[in-house]
Structure formats: C-alpha cells, structure tokens
Length: 276
Image (cartoon, rainbow, N blue to C red):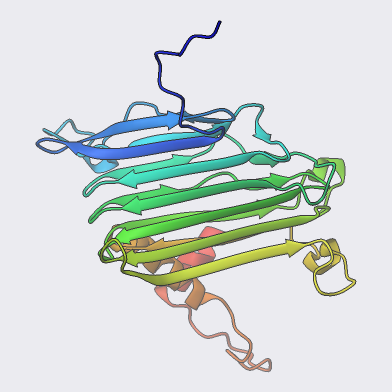
C-alpha cells in the first residue's frame, strides 16, 4: 500500500546553489537567500563595514562575504557545480574560497567535472570574486564558465580566474587531460537585450593541435590566469594595474648602447621600491 507524500517534490539538483543579496529598507544590505546542495557548500560569516567606516558611524554600508566550498575539499569526476548569484542595487559581495579547488583524477578522459556561475549585478552593486586557484591533479578533465550580467551596464567587477600546474610536490606539471575556462561579461538593457562586453576563453589541452605535450608548451610557468576589473568602484585599482603595465620594460624602449640610464618617474621609483 502506497501513500502520497504531503510534501512537495524537491526541485533542487545536486551541486546547485543560490545567493541573493538585497537591501532591507531603508538602506541595510542583507543576504536574502543562501541555498546550496551537496557537494556544494556556502558559508556566510557576519558582514563587515568598509575599512573607512570602522569608526562606528551610523548606518554604515555593509559588505557581505561568502565562502565557496565543496565537501571533501575538491570536485570529483562527473560532479557538476552550478551557482546563481544576484546582487541588487547598492549591495557589495566578496566571494572567496578557503583553499584551492582541487580536481580529482578521472578514470575516463571524457568524464569531465564542471562548474558554472551566473551573476546578475544591479546598478551600483559590486562583486569581488577572488578564489584560490583551481588545482587540477594529473589525469583530470575540467570545464568551468562564469557569466556576469550588468543591469543597464552598471555594477562593478573584480574577478580573478586562475589555474595551477597541479601538485608540484608530487612532481605534477600540467599532467592534465584538459582544462577549459570561459568568462563572459554582458551589459543587459532588458530581458532580451544584451550586449557582449568581454569574452575570455582558455583551453589547455594535453596535446592541443600539435604533438607537443602541454607541459612542454607551458615551460616553467606554473600558473595561468585572467584578471577582470570593471566599474567605478574599482577605478583606482584599475588605474594601478594600467600604471604597472605601462612601467614594464619593452623591446625598443631604450638603446642597448645607452650608458646613462634615464631618470625614473615617480611611479617607476615606487615600483622599484616595492620589488626590492
């Protein structure tokens, strides 16, 4: 004899998660929703005021932090992680991890582990996504995608997407089957109007289109990454990186026979002092 369950059937799928950050009237940012399903885990500590407002001023704007974790410390072959993030206007969110995202060995190169994240940012919202690097073990296949939708072109982003060569202490050096990562930034004007601002796609394949192994193509490089900075919230940070890039020495920037070195600019002196 069977009985009908009085409870609704679960609609969530393994590895799914959701974060919604909204504003509680009049102006208090709150985590309206934090949901996750095994093997994904989300940890949200108490929000903190910005450093400039630690003096206890009235109604400081709060910055929320959420840690992205996986049970077991990594992603097993065949696992699929899917995270939806929504930031309402005027909110701030920092997404971090508590260690590298480990990708465990697969018995079949065609069995891929996947991870995807879709983020919607409202006007004057800001997201900092600075995870520890992905660490694919030897004989792994991994694919991930991050898609960011900026409502009416607003919102600010600071995103770092990077991967290491594996477990160097165990002698691994890009001994993977395949690693794929794609980042997209869209400006959305409505439900159906969207304009692509940026698409960055990285494919690291064991053989590629040649017979040269990936480890040989990467040489001594043990990490590869992409940094995306956009929006008024991170203007000063973006300016810093532009200045650093302009200060890098370039071929043809000076004559090899020059005996007298040109005087360094203020920014160049600061750069030399930091490196020393």
